[in-house]
Length: 304
Image (tube, rainbow, N blue to C red; front, side, top):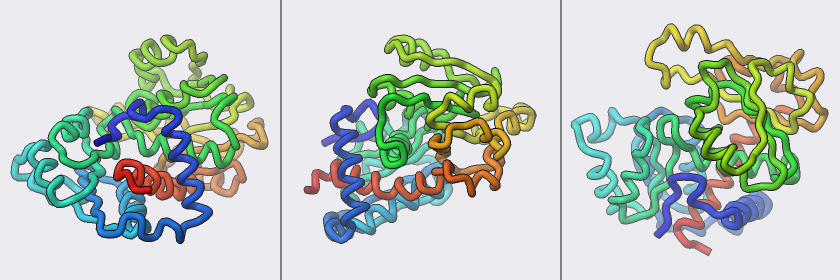
């Protein structure tokens, strides 16, 4: 039995295969309508979510399966003090696969040690979000036609941004990748990722505080929100929340074929005027999330 806790749990070959299956689902949806008939997905979301939870549920339903679960910790026995291990052990008796989001880093890993069915990490604190990364990779492949030879700008909350951390760990596997890290000093990419991932693998990167200075060199601009829920005090959040805002004016020097990604939800870090720019791909990105999660469910359930 295989779980997906970290993007490194998947080989590059497996990632490429998932993208291939997702593309086939997009082209031939009817072929997959009953692939998971009589199978059940449990969504255990101890932290709020819109796109991730609903895309998982839509994915299983479109595969012909069923969904059960909860959307907040308060509506589960966690509110009574039940441990993650006990919750997962019991839920694994009722389901065939579990998608779990938790505010504590490492919670899905702990759950996988007690589960009788595959666990998918749907986001754990500021740590990892591997299915968002798979969504990002599918989007890049469909919009850019390749996963190599790319300069990727990561902008916003790089310290707590689990989507950024997972994406870096995935993209370093492909040839000729360069990162441009754009954030205020307080929200810089953690040193352990720079040292243990980028430096260790000889991946070039530059650090900046301003988007306009670097936007002309980017093939991809990956925006993230400053996450209020990760801050220990509100004053720090208020001081930093508007530090990286993308406007139409800032895109004037960008490449015509650059794409703009964002894992969503958006607060104010991308103005709504940018939505009409042909380079804005973040809503397509959200749509692709359903298809890559369909492919992942099929893989983990070993459904052909």
